[in-house]
Length: 261
Image (cartoon, rainbow, N blue to C red; front, side, top):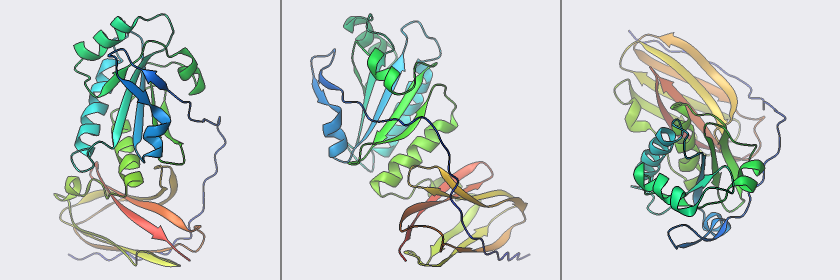
């Protein structure tokens, strides 16, 4: 059975007001004797992860391990484009303790430092744990959280790959979606999203900005196997890069969309 769905939607920005965050420099020799410069990493176009922890926090290592796995997978296609720092939430943890925390938890990606009080305050305070993702030459705070859920790694991955110019997660949805195209791209006023579903699917289509923040939800419903075609009016979107985010039966794939009026 072939189901064709046609919809034209004018996209509107969702404006939220939150505490502004700015990147804070982290420069100098780490607890392993290696020198680093966070702003230099960003100026090189890299993504930077900061993980604030408490040595006796049992819930802090697992998120760091999941994020490290995500980062290492990204760097298979983008070698060396992610750096990570591990900082205690206070200034009283010793270098030995921080270095041991990283090594004992298998966190080889993270560069250990012994003082993080000013840094964690800058990003909103300590949680269990506090996680920050920075990216790009424009020194953006792309993600920050004082808690952690597994879906955060997907959000961070998509933000990193979008920043690096990649298309994400397509392999993850191929068991459910055989076709996922966005045309024309670049687009000026209208864009068509074409899908072919292999099976009945809980389908969510969203448009996000380059940091992964949702601009608009195109659809969210269960569909039978078949063809889905969505035509979207993009005249209200300013020029720039966006993401078409498709979630099918819990798996997510992202296509990059360039708007050029």
